[in-house]
Length: 128
Image 1 (cartoon, rainbow, N blue to C red):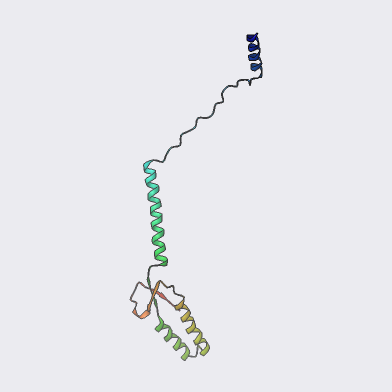
Image 2: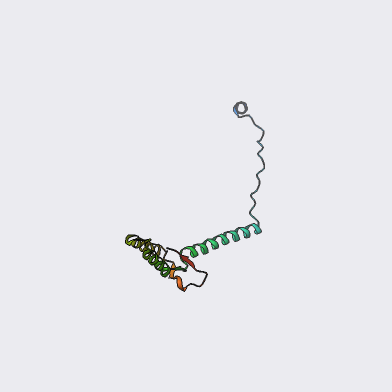
């Protein structure tokens, strides 16, 4: 009797069990390839070059001292001539000198200001 019940139990289990499905086929996974040595060297060189260029450009723009010439003597002589010729009145003359002062004060701190008379060539000249 025990054996009969056992076979009945196994039959019941077979009736209740989930039907078997064929195994699903998945697409083959491609293994991720690491970049080659040559590509890695190229990336390193590109990053190094970009960082170097950014550093040099930033230093040149904000920190490097540069020479700027201002022709103060020529500007004052021109304003004097205009005043004596009657092209400027007292108020306009004061405004022109205030403009000269404003131009000189607006020059960044990393610029060295020299008189325009001292410049021979290759120096930036500021005209007020």
